[in-house]
Amino acid sequence: MLRALALLLLAAAPTWGSLEGDAAPLARGGGVIAVVTTSTDLKALVEAVGGERVAVESLAPPLHDPHAVEVTPGQLAKLKAAALLVRIGLDHEPWLARVRAAMNDARFVPGGPGDLDTSRGIELLQTETPRVKSERGVHVHGFGNPHYWLDPANAAPMTQTILDALTRLSPDGYRAFALNRARLLERLDAGLARWTAVLAPHRGARVVVVHDSWPYFARRFGLAVVATVEPAPGIPPSPSSLAALTARMKEAGVKLLITEPASNLSIANQVAARSGARLVTLIPSVGGDAEARDYPSLFEVNVRRLAQALGGAR
Ligand SMILES: [Zn+2]
Image 1 (spheres, protein in one colour):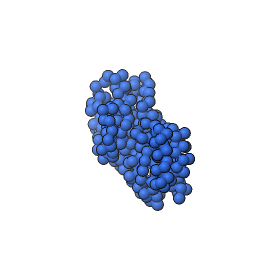
Image 2 (image 1 turned 90 degrees about the vertical axis):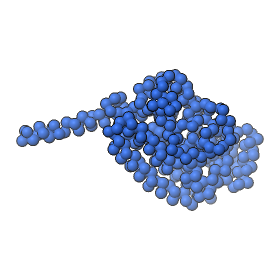
Image 3 (image 1 turned 180 degrees about the vertical axis):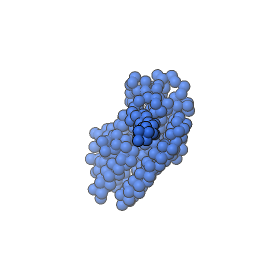
Image 4 (image 1 turned 30 degrees about the horizontal axis):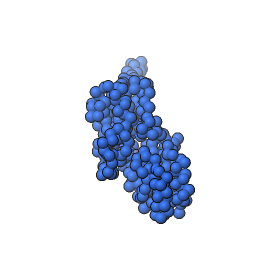
């Protein structure tokens, strides 16, 4: 009897140990991989793949101006202790240059051993958009549109890149990472079928956006983005370009203007009032709204808002 109990305890011991380690995912070391991401979307994807084997910090909050991200000394310290910096790439993070200069750490230079650019493996849109490419260090979509995480199908290549990197750091985690990733993709596949069906009656709907964040989303769900309020990414419209835009919107019968929580609301309201289009606020990143708590729910929220707005606009 006692002997059997002792064996049971022995058998249970490793499990207890690993449970303890997994229960403290914020602890550094102990098999937990410290990861820093540039966005909450990337944080959500790394957490979905890494599960309890990762501790992830996002440098940028969910809603931010890409030119005004301030990284705190505490975040810099976390990056110093991290094994991996995961970023969107292209010219999405102009503020990262300052972070790298402050860090002076060869691991995190572009292409360095700790640097992970998830735009690898993505079929980019707008790579031919004529822009002043010499303006490095600003978010102008100069290397293709960087808002590619807003197509849920792009989670497959993004999480493949993440899975490969986590496996390099922790080869014995591979099975868990691959299983976690498969579960996420399964959930997204089911979501995609549902979201596509919800938006099917609105295929071809013509919309105008404030910032050009939505081309991947629009392609996936069959919306036609006919114009942007910003004449170029990050550039506010002049009064004359606003007048031309609202005239075009009326002419083209555009019923919907897509804003984001960080958009300039007074400009958006002016465009809506003058064009007669309805305003809908979509959430560009995980955490930008309480309901958008993880990557799949980001699409739940946006698809629902869009369907409501388009339904009402008929
Ligand atoms: Zn942008």
